[in-house]
Image 1: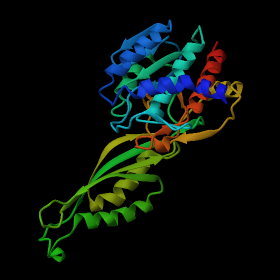
Image 2 (image 1 turned 135 degrees about the vertical axis):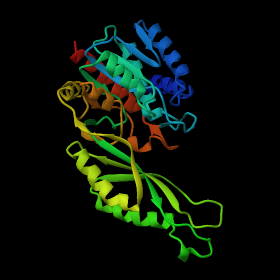
Image 3 (image 1 turned 45 degrees about the vertical axis):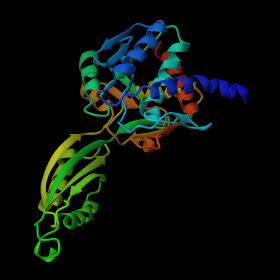
Image 4 (image 1 turned 30 degrees about the vertical axis):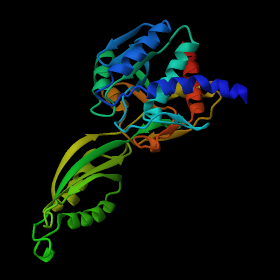
Length: 331
C-alpha cells in the first residue's frame, strides 16, 4: 500500500501546485511563468511564444492547454480523486507531460502548452500557423480512450419574437418565453444532438416579454454535412424569430497518428479503447493547418467546466507512462 501511495505523491503534489495558480483564459501569465521555469530547470530548452510554451519543435507534437474556465474550486484530494478548477481540463494532462520530462533525457516529440483554449482558441491558431506540426496528440479528457473521431459544432443564437401586453392580460400579447417552449419541441425534429446553453427573457416590468434570446449548440459526427444541417436548422427555427450563427466547424477523423498512439498504449500495457470527442478542442485549429491530430488524455469530460470537476491521479500516471512509450516509438 505504501508503494502505491508514494507513486501518486508526485502527480498529486504537482497537480495541487498547478491548481493553486489561477489561470482562467486571458490570465495565463503566472502559470506560463511557473511552467517555463519548471521545464527549464529540468534541462530542456523551452520557448515562450506569447502565452504559449513550446519545447523541442518537431513534426510530431504533444499538445494541451494551460487555461481554465472561470469557475473557482480549490484543490482537494479524497484518497481517490483530486478536485479543483482545471484538475481534469487540462492540468492533469500537463502533469502527465511534466512527469515524462522528469523521466527521460532525450525528447523525440515536441511539446506545446497553449493559451486561450477555453475562449477563442487564439493560442492554438497561432501555434498551428507558425509551427505547422505534421502529427499531434492533443491531450484532453477522454478517460484514456483514443478519440479518433472529432465532432463538429453549429452554435446559433435565436431571438424569439412575441408581442408585449400588460401582465394581467396575457391574452392580448404573445409571450416570447412561452413561444420558446414551442421551439424546444421543434428541436427534436433535428437528428443531431443539441444543448440549450443559455436563455434570456422577460423583465421586472409587469408585461409579457416580446423577445427571448436562446443559445443552442448542435454537435455532430464527421460524416454529417454542415451545410445540410444549417439548412435544416434555419428552415425549422427561423419562423420563430431571428437566427444567427455564433460558431461553426466541421468534424474530422484522425489518420496515421492513431497508429503511433496505439503502439505506445500497447507498450504501456493498457487496453485500446476508442471514442469520439464531442466538444471543441485545439485539434480543430491544428487540423485546419493540415495536421493529423488525435485527442486523448486522462480524466472524464462530463465533469469539466463544473464545480464537480475531478480526476483520478492514477490516470495521470498511466497517461505519463504512455507518453514515455510514445517517446520511444518516435525514436
